[in-house]
Image (cartoon, rainbow, N blue to C red; front, side, top):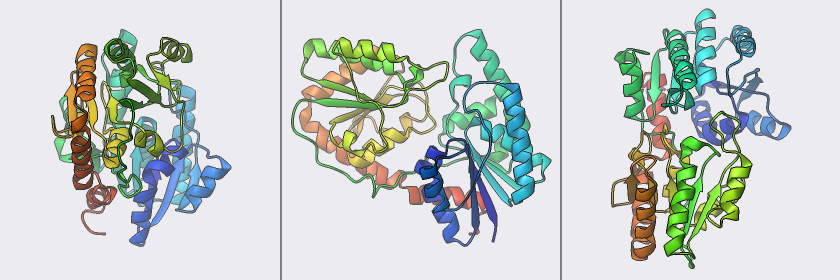
Length: 372
């Protein structure tokens, strides 16, 4: 029996996105310890129903050397205490500081799941370029002793290889993050005016400004069409401020729905799911909408392009192209007869490629060298 530590940062994300993986590992007789930032009483109860839990101090956004050193020292101490045989880390801070701590504490096996490149590696001002260079350097250090680095799409793998962050022998690609397709069961398309939905944290790189601009264009021609936005605020430098979202609402362009712990009723109430993101590892919200049986309109960007067969379950448009986005929205409004066919195709693709049971099988075969 192996002792597996799953290292993340957000306890809420750990519950929402790692529960199936934890249950799968436990079912094979292994011990699992989840590690994340301090959890609420309710979150702690949910995690401890699955496995053991330890918290550690981690600042999920920004660069603060003193706090990052505190994170590293805490992980060193924790690894020394619990003595895991395997560590699986995901998101940038747990990967970097967890990788260094695992090396210093002689953790036998260290695996990494790269869910996306993130803000630091996108084109932008000099400050962002410098942040990206620093992040790449820290990745090289932390991944030096990693057994495997697992990507959700081939574009992210290519980026790490081109920038010589890891050698190709360490790189693996799986078919995304995985989704409980039984939980996200298909629903009948609602009646009424066309409803477009976007679910995303309030970040510029999610393409929300393009979404609002395209909605404004479409509503000049089809004023009854509804454009909804669901998602939480984000403190990162790329965060969109509440007053900007309020202006979209005041203009009658976008209806902001706030945030929720269950996206299913919101997806069920829409006809077309839209995510105009600049980049993704694998967009979970798109997979959720596919599983529920909705056509997809997203960008020809890393991660996003893996979710759409052009013209079959939806469409890809160029990143940041407001006019192309608006044109496809209008196409959907004018081709209502295609919604159900495309939604059925989305569900079929979700079943074939993104079922969490298949994804976990791929992931665990890498971590355990196909021996569970």
